[in-house]
Length: 75
Image (cartoon, rainbow, N blue to C red; front, side, top):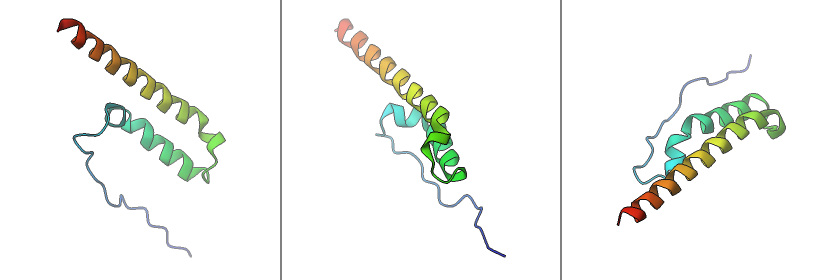
């Protein structure tokens, strides 16, 4: 019988100065890690999850750029 550790391990809080896409898309990033671990790190089997993460990152970057543009317009 093989022992497999299934505990939660060590968790670290995100840093306050982390990029917005890292903070807001953490759920999708964790889903990628989980998917890859379950599928022997075969990226093509997790492409849908990766695409979800990329869509989240793109959405956050657009929102941040729009916010920065609005802030410049108010000055």
